Length: 610
Image (cartoon, rainbow, N blue to C red):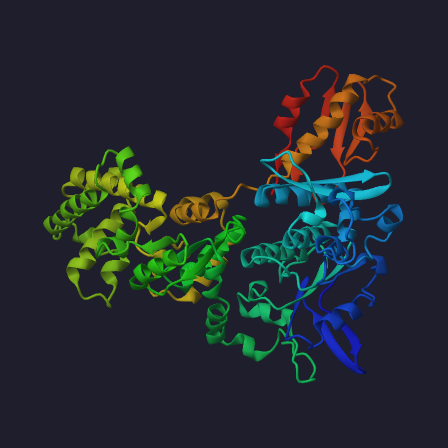
């Protein structure tokens, strides 16, 4: 599809005009303002050469008739395991069904879609999913990964069933236009963010050509990701006063206003979401939030799935009260803070050094009392700073901490700058300083302390503030301006991953600690699928084996001829390729011959490409 696309729909004899500027358009407005009616009308619209069967509408009531069994509305006498979703005739209408039932039929028919969904359920939600035909009826079961006990789909949480439905519809590449009414239904706030990220990837985000056109309506702030002014035209604002929905044109002069850019960034952040999180990640300001969100998306860390919400506290002075409050309501906060939080006083690190985890790691590093270790280290450190104030002037005067005109306490500026410069230089350069050996020794002790604090959830930016890590320019004084962070992100978009990871190592360590989830690996289930088929095929492999022979072997071992692999007989080799446009793996085609160690070949060849 070529954007923009203009459409008109009639609601209550009134023509509503919509323009789709990219692969994702979001309808926002109160109940009764017309969002659902517009989505249903769009289902009947024509889109270029797209057939009506390639347009899918997902209702907000995605559980549908499953709810009759889940809540015993009109089905009282039954066994949970007896529930089925329907027969082959029902499956033929899978793209017309507006509830989750249709998506289970898609996964029954499309092994690659099933893998896309089931791998995410396995890694992110500790669930296994099983789809089986039983006497001509489709049945679905789930189990937890650490249990052999299966249970019927009607016993699974409604939120997870909604998630399965949306993911299957997203990954189904036969669907070209996807209309989703309230994707957030029954989803935890952090999971809503995960779903939005998946939607944006399939839609191609806001400014890229995507795989399908997605239009969705929402009532959730988590589903609204206005990160820059260019995102605004992709939102349609519905009103409850009977007037037509509002949509901003990309050429509107208001989008060129620089102050609006910062306003949009600030408006899109919400402290309230931290109340729903398991592990709030507290950062000092909006710039930190912007960079952390960028890395979360770039490296697919899925912080929201891990129950982590990034919260800017606007200055290190707010950390103690915020941490104590979060702990009071049962949260386990993580902190990413500037170096001055450590140098100036002990308010922040005292939040962590007295805990059992800190004591355990301190003992492992050979320190009986972490507080005493901190006192001794700071005494030695401050004395060394005073003794070298004159001799190291050419070193510390280059750091932004020293150039900070807002800080009038020269002793604090000296300490901050010298300690930060320890982490700008390697040991070889530090040895050239006055009393170089003492400085190297101090640096090693600091690293030990910082490593212990990181194990406890306290991450200190060793080079100073976030701006100390910027690669775009080294001229920033610590102003914390969102515009500077935005410029840095635009620069990072063109940098190599290895360079970014080396430069932003501390921030990425903090985010990985906050994420605490496994990486999605689609190669893993594909290896299992291939091994289940290739071993018996090679067991009967011969020169005159036909495609029909191979299908027969697959049917014997799998119960069905369907396979996501293509087999070509090139005797004495058999070449295997994968028949899917949506699975992200590399290594195909693969050649096997009789007698090969198939486990070894499959493990070596197939790699994750996410």
